[in-house]
Amino acid sequence: MRKIILLFLTVISFKLSAQEVNIIPQPVEIRTSNFPNEAFAIDKYTVISINDSSILNSAHFLKNYLLKYYQIDLKITLSEAQTNSISLNLRKSQYKNPNEYFLSVLPKALVSASSTAQGLFYAIQTIIQLLPQEKDSLGRLIIPAVEITDYPRFDYRGMHLDVSRHFFDVAFVKQYIDYLALHKMNYFHWHLTDDHGWRIEIKKYPKLTEIGAWRNGSIIGLWPGQGNERIKYQVLPAEVKITPKDAVIKTDSIRHGGYYTQEQIKDVVDYAAKRYITIIPEIEMPAHSMALLAAYPELGTEPGKKYEVAQTWGMMNKYNNVLQASDTTFKFMENVLTEVMTLFPSQYIHIGGDEASKVWWKQSAVSQQIMKDNGLKTESELQSYFIRRMEKFVNSRGKTIIGWNEILQGGLAPNAVVMSWQGEKGGIEAAKQNHKAIMTPEDKMYFNHGQFVKEDSLTANKFSPLINVYNYEPIPAELSAEQAKYIWGAQGCLWSEYITNPAKVQYLLFPRLDALSEVLWSPKEKRNYSDFQKRLKTQFKRYDLMGITYSKRYLEN
Image 1 (cartoon, one colour):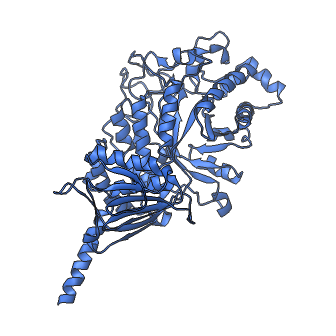
Image 2 (cartoon, rainbow, N blue to C red):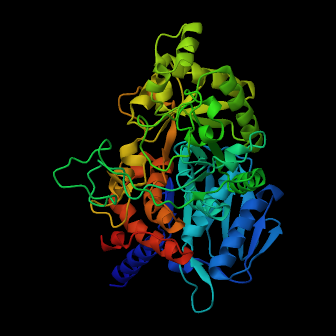
Image 3 (cartoon, one colour):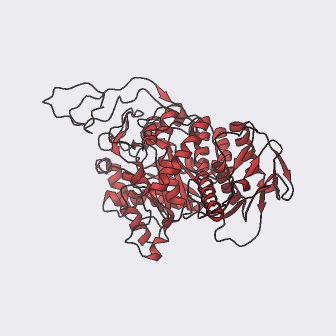
């Protein structure tokens, strides 16, 4: 009988310990203890010990987190592991991945090691997720005994934010970067320019922000013709078919805008770097350039035209937002990118390349002459000519371009990375041509789409539920093992047409960011949606602690 009781207690203690370990993304290996008394307690006497000054950044990140959310202020010491310590150790040993880390929770210490400072930063994010939501009666934080070995599956784990349609200030951009850090993401795609606003200071061309950073209104509701009952524009008679051609578009006439100074950009870049996140800036070309053209109309395809910063979305074929592929334009964009590349140390510069309506080049005598002079037979070849010219310049500065999958039209630039948003076809084609590809198919990776069939707030009229994000596999089955190596990773995108405030960013981001992080970090065979849903319950408690908005409907499942 005694043996049965001991066995029962062992099983129960194992279950209690396992229940306390709810980490997202799921680590490669987790080994939990059978004995709750092996847990480690963080109290006011605990110290954070580091064996190398290069780890100080990660130590401060943990220190600040504990102080902000638990009011526990720990001392940081440069020393080897000691009793009652959180020990972070840089070890030049052989790991499977440069960002691999090992973490062990013992009764008298929490010990972590990695061969890189970045790996230890990821260990910190795991430690944060091992913390309980509340202190015990003695004011301690009890962490369950566990051993973890962990490293990422994909090298590119990205998230995007559009600040052109709606501008978000520096404080929130930093908060957004913290969200990515918590989920072990390592790339932030910052969409800085578009038809609706130019958001980055360029000293050589001040009108880009004096004029291009401001619009005189924003469309009310969804673009007509999307078949959504939430469209809020002037009501037409029932017998009139609603299409963009015959619908009445209304705007709110509220001036909207803003931009980041170069000093602010440097500050954000430094903030992200301390979280091991690389910022990839996007400067749109040759289309999505209405804000630029409003400031410098001479770069457009219609001489003498007065352009305005766009107030409505989805107007690719309705309004001319395309740059002229002239030497004047190329010199202008080279000057812009020179300043951009000075601000962003990233190896990669995103130049857009999407949704360039060819009709404007067809109608332009200058464009047609450029095509003739360069032996170009189609407007798609003109687009390729534009992208290749810009790529050659970017490459000359030691950088690499990324473009949306339309840069494949007319022939892919020699060194370009393809970001595939119109399904997976572009990424597959790029991989087969031995080019890096980032998968961000709209139907699964666009988080501005509704999370539920009947969304309770205005979103793009499409549906991207959590389960579809979680079940997404970035490597298409049709690729060979060799071709699959060119799938660099994947990215979620958050376009801000209908996102006007930080709370809504949070609502649309969470918990789909959790799902994406697990897709990109965890081993494919480890993914289990039912288990993920259980771990989300604990994650939501962390979000409550951090004051993050998310949909309570997930708690009903």
